[in-house]
Image 1 (cartoon, rainbow, N blue to C red):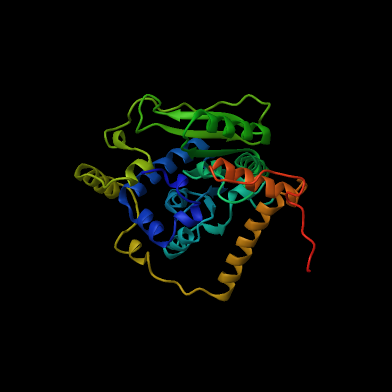
Image 2 (image 1 turned 45 degrees about the vertical axis):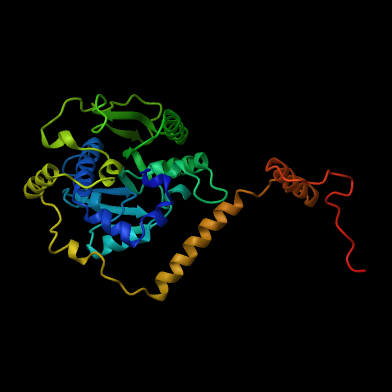
Length: 335
């Protein structure tokens, strides 16, 4: 089974059924919480000081639960999937939520946030999901606007999955072009299932020395030794040992109360005219972003299009007449 980001755009893949399944999956909730806790640790927030954080690709609010437990911290979440945001609202997530495509930029003013985290979200930017979409341009715009909205010296910790070294280079180059300092941090690099990659970025410190945090090498405890990627866990059901482990972990941590909170998932919320209007405006904005990428390019003539079509037919082995000086010539109208 291929990874979710290779199957469909996020707003399509995470429909109502998939979003509900994702949020109720005990193993995924456990993994999300552990990764979010590690991301907060890497942020290294000042103790006792108020902070406003941005959760990029917040989904149904699983990572936001970790942020909500931090003292003196408030947060906002961005996600493009309306079904995910609907579940987050049903669960009465504490953070403010906004539907936005991060490939079109982070829509906030300069120096708005003291830090930012992202859990399993930015790998979706590697794909060209609609006409005119350019992954490199979307990555550049994302990192440039993220740098724009962070305070000077603020950190961004972005956890992600990649398929190859080329994608790693794309991320690193886009972050450097935006003016970030920092770099890649890999926890448990000696294992396959536990290996986690984070971009730890420092805003406004591209030309200053930065102290990168240390990566985790050895297993902390037995519970963490089985933590894999969300894609791996979602391909099959949890075995009995994993379920028992999660039950113990949920008892020790202040996690979601399944009977109270998760029971609200799937309840239909009445859509207002304002909700429909916002969705239409959002889709129009995405379509215009794709069409604008063709501006300034020389369009092919009618004759050129006809020749291209005939060439495609020839490659398929079909019998096509030879091109002449009359090929593609427009006919005179009427008799």
